[in-house]
Image (cartoon, rainbow, N blue to C red; front, side, top):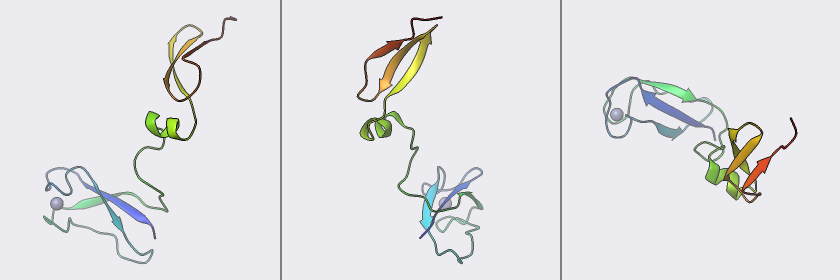
Length: 93
Ligand SMILES: [Zn+2]
């Protein structure tokens, strides 16, 4: 069952002002208005989404065993998430 994410272009109610997700059958009509406040909504994502949120969020990376680094300077990277070393430096060039 695909999850569709909707949001309003402005205004809206507590339910739709950020965005909300809806399970819909593949042949269901796209929602055109918020079921709560009747503000027009637009579809953000369609497809077979698994889970929610940004898959590259540091906490997600960490839980999947990835290590994320932020570039701190020339050839030097500091860890922002994950199980790897706290910093890496590519001492070369
Ligand atoms: Zn609403």
